Image (tube, rainbow, N blue to C red):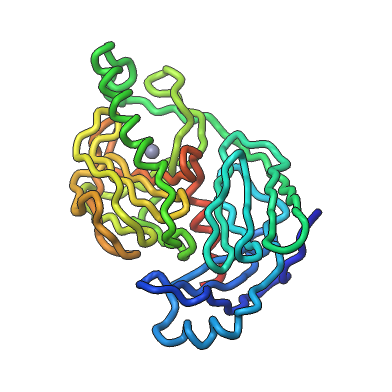
Length: 311
Ligand SMILES: [Zn+2]
């Protein structure tokens, strides 16, 4: 079935008021492909209480996009209290009923989401996946030791990547992922997500994020609020490496940094300077590599940015 949602526009909605600073206002709006998704942003102080009462008969609709692209971050809305499963995982739901998940580069549809509302029957939502083109990108001139590392180095790389992977497994209740993401650095996009990569003539993994060319030392801003879950100035492949968790399994990683200004456990706000552009690790020149994940699934930051909709 295809759950119906509002065709367009924004609908002001508020999460039930909660203790602490994590009150979040949400709104439904049209997204690319004319699909309804749910986003949230910080509520102005005082507004939440009043509106939350009006929303007590929380929205019983189930809203997901009918089709998504490979690499997308998918936001959905379910009746609060629902149990939602996707890809073998039970999704964390906000008090308002927002859920999020990521679609891998090679995913094929239909994606199947099951929703067990607190009242009523199970709904099965099927979402089509639009396949994308993944052109090959040749990257020449990277240090040979990063392409064909000796066994001892390969072991170091494995250990380091495992530490980064672990940081991405956090399932935090914060809802920073629902902010409208902003670019961490202004600049030319020099590498796109998903492209098959050939390093110095040797096939490597697909590109896991987007590259933005910028001079070394350019400040890197947090694209959305979050918590720093990994920070290391010197990983073999990725150089200065930083991971910011945005909640519900969504995280950003920044690679090749020349400087890191935050520490693990720090809370950062959207737009806060967290690091500086560099060319450390397997890199051919100063740029920011910005990757995003839903747990271990890599998603495309460019698509997340495009979710911003009208300013
Ligand atoms: Zn990159």
